[in-house]
Image (cartoon, rainbow over all chains, first blue to last red; front, side):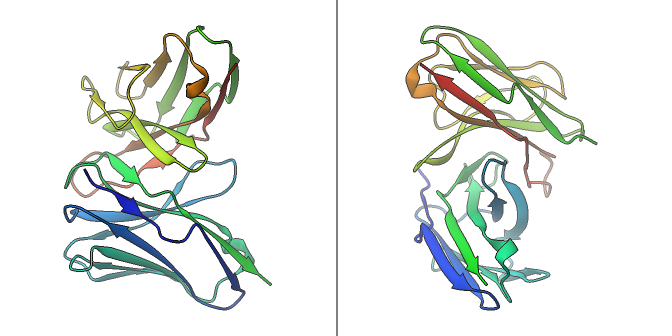
Length: 113
Length: 114
């Protein structure tokens, strides 16, 4: 079965720096990969989706890359701000291209001013 | 649009009691999902409904049942609650059609079983 590893439970950076979060998967290459943000006491909020034939996707200060050879996605937040502090979750389809997702355990990002 | 709504927000049950968690979405989505989130375990899929009239087991279905009442509503039932079911439960929905995979989550139900 597919396993997801987000290999940093916590990441602390200074305001203005670029945060880079990693998501690795172990089994089949999924048709797409998603990133979500979760604030304490709230449900996850969708940020970005990248498909298997896309190398990179951008949205404002966010950038996601997808390397099917390495079985890895990187999530970057440039010019980070304290408001970016949250837990970021990586998610893949439960089977290769379905709609049900499995989630990584998340990386908690803290941006200090 | 309210998006995804869940009731109740908080619940305390005694072991062996039953309850139903309600979820509704107003985005005309085909697919709906129930997850539980526990410290150190992340979000885990309990059941999902890819379309009205269908339901499928996720990673952790034992002890739960679901009903897709109509396109808008998807309920999760605990027939005999156990302390191991203490968790935060999230409902989510997605378009379900090819290309519309992003999920929209409700605010969660915080359940404690004593």
